[in-house]
Image (cartoon, rainbow, N blue to C red; front, side, top):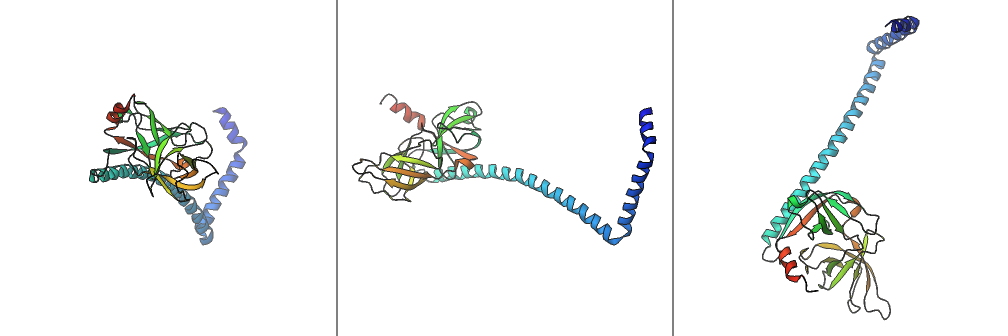
Length: 263
């Protein structure tokens, strides 16, 4: 306490000067129109900036909530469509929305993790898609989370077909550019053009037929070759992947059990 009093006495003249300056500034601001308006304008600008920042922050969280709601609505709408078209669909599919919580895109064996697990009915081998197209296949499942093998993993193989003529090929990734994959097993007699649409074949219980995969970027047929070398531009943008849907086939386990041991 004594030290504080000593400091106040030592700097008393300076403190009195500062107090007088502040008082003079306030009197000038409130008794003179221009300084007062300038002071208030500056204060209002600061307050407005603060409100803008708070609005941006609240808007961000509101947008995230809206995106999650939209993802759930998309899954519900897809389920309604499947129910309406049940006569046309070979396998009974159900779609469940999920969020990507972890992902790699710069490795040969990329993976992603979603916030759905066994408690939600997720099982290994189920498909993953988003609003743009195919994402990958569930590899391992925990109680609350699941790891997905995406189509941008060199271990991935996806049965696809050309939408123009139903010719089937196998989509594979070469580990280079996550925007592109390669369509293999397309014979030389097949006419392939840039812009041809590639979709899921429906030949496995993982994905129904017709889910978008990508479009042909270019195709090369070397002299004497038996197959095309086809580059496909993928519809799914993995750099911006946030929300997905788990594709659940009610008959998948039965179909897999029937084919076990046939290879």
